[in-house]
Image 1 (cartoon, rainbow, N blue to C red):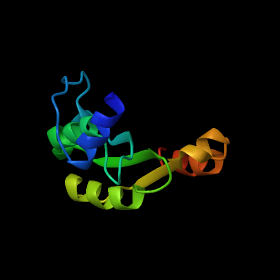
Image 2: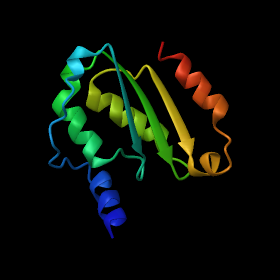
Image 3: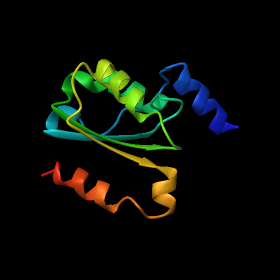
Image 4: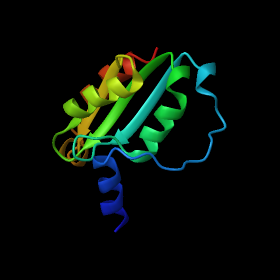
Length: 114
């Protein structure tokens, strides 16, 4: 049931109540954010976190998991929400993860962290 609720919140682009984090993003040069993609949308907890903190983000890298598609549309929406381009994105499908076919993509993503 919770799975359906999360999907519905993502589709509706809802924000939700989340606890404050103990780390202040303005103290970091790089923020790495990750979320599942739900019908071409990010999860509601991440949407809330971004809306609360986006003015403190310097550089953002993203990673996504998805059933099969939707990340391209989600990236466009996410960049609009952030008000800036995302430096690098890693998108993995459930099939790639299940078959352990993600190492090259992961290596390319990790090169951008340094």
